[in-house]
Image 1 (cartoon, rainbow, N blue to C red):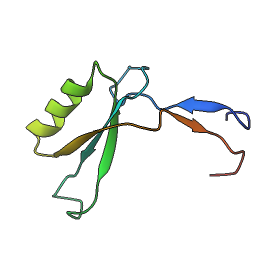
Image 2: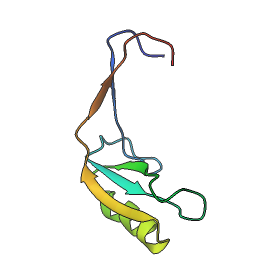
Image 3: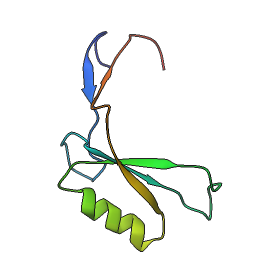
Length: 79
């Protein structure tokens, strides 16, 4: 658990990558999700293409957008 006021950096979703996220890849698995549902993977610049290709190959990718919130600040509340 992070101390109150600490910041946690949103990281790339690629396995083993600890780089800050710069992109959010929106996707949906139509076999199990409703059409309006959007799942999100985060990507650094280096892994954006790899993650997009992975999702596109499986017909899951919807769109890629810049990730604007690079940090999350803890408020000390239970989640």
